[in-house]
Image (cartoon, rainbow over the protein chains, first blue to last red):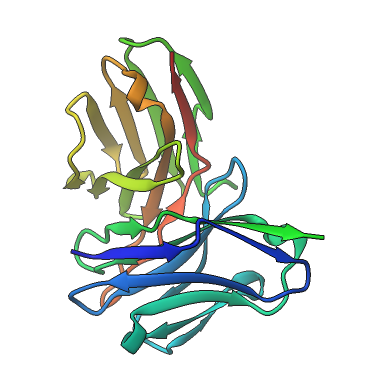
Length: 114
Length: 115
């Protein structure tokens, strides 16, 4: 069965600092991995996804993630945090099969301090 | 134009009532989903329809019944509401492409509160 683990339910950074949100996956098949962002009282918006092309994936708003098979990781980074990045971030895995079912991690709440 | 829309945005009701949440997408997608987000923000899939056919039915109480009148709409009807049904329900849609998994586009959510 597939699963994702997000280490750190809360992460706080200063504005301008590096953002690093951790995600590790478990999958018996080549995984498809996603990062979604949820702003307060809103739906989820796709930041980026990995579908077995380039291992370094660039997304929207300056975010990127690197797929590392040896570490079963797909960590999300941004070089310089902005106040508007404060939100809940979800890592998800899909088997890419007929059902396209997404299995989400428990989320990481990112706070950005001025 | 809103891609995936849900109505209502907020729903407050009493235990034992029956309620429906509607979802519509104007993206031309074939597949639609319902997810439940609990109070701890944990998201779990409930149902998925592809071209009006049910393809995912997780271990959800049978008080929950999805209905897809056409591929642009997926409604969720809940009978005999319980306190534990209080959550945010998200609709999503995706377009099938061969050889890769597809991005799911989410609606704004419906916050259901059962008193």
